[in-house]
Length: 477
Image (cartoon, rainbow, N blue to C red; front, side):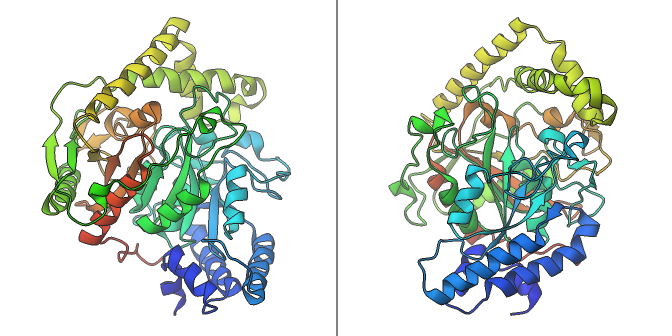
């Protein structure tokens, strides 16, 4: 197998080759490190590559194979981790100048522990904008670029991990998603990106465990890889109350056991808070729906008016940053991202009544989505309203332009399909749907019932079989 083929080999296949002693974890890692050395200066997806630590762990993985030990599902597979998540022995910089001088983390985050237990070789910290605040990825480390077109963003805030996986720099990356930060980058980069059900995967480090809207999930090139990584991450944590009450993963619905979807009902949502969707995105979304229809699924457009609480969602999002980041202003204001500062300024103007009313609106939206699931098995919509934005886009002030029309700032005009499900807690997954007129990936989002990640992933697997995408690779870097 040549290095380029190895780099684009699915994680589950690579792990199987390692178990069969047909692939060395050390040689696999070396191929990824060599590719990263060549590609990272151009796409800037890694904040730090842990060469020595990763090589030691790859050697241990190889020795475990030689000894005949029981091996985990990701044994020997190189995985990157977003730089909001602690990895022992390296700094966590949060994409911010504030933490440029951070010392090494003294322990792995729980999710990193679970990945290591499954055999993964953690080899890099992936870039993120400051505190994961926006849908593009840039910061003190520079600009992270999309491997499909270096003048476009890979999205954010898990943009580094998405760019890496799209470029073949590890088959998987651990991302986090506070308002679409896994699904948006997956959409921009031609990947699968899963935001799980609230409480399925612990997020131990969130400051507001009870009002949490932040999730952790995989970025992958295939549905199976995403499913395996998700299965490794799930499970309760004593530090996350949502995980303790049993947000259990439901088994596969019998109506999805085969390729006959005659019993499946899909509600199609063309617009949420956004005024427009690009013609090429609409075409590819409808082609995905047609693929499921060809398997027997019934598709119906959801026509009733839904308040997608864009304003209230913004209150919750920006007010949280205003409060959390206020501690840094006296010393660091001049070195903080202007987008962070703009969001803080707006957030500080909201009143307590605004915040509480936004929390009430979150409950109302949850109940509305629950009522839709009385009629439908899945909700389907685009993931982004258009392909990736230019890397120069100002997320605080620039309007998103779709087919020549200005459509508001990013959360209004581009990522409006994503944030509602951070607030309602339903599982949502982005899947490649094709390519736009500009040659960049487009994406379709599948939203399922609480705990129904397996069903959501099964729908993705059926789409992947009908309209394959993993054979496509970005231009050579």
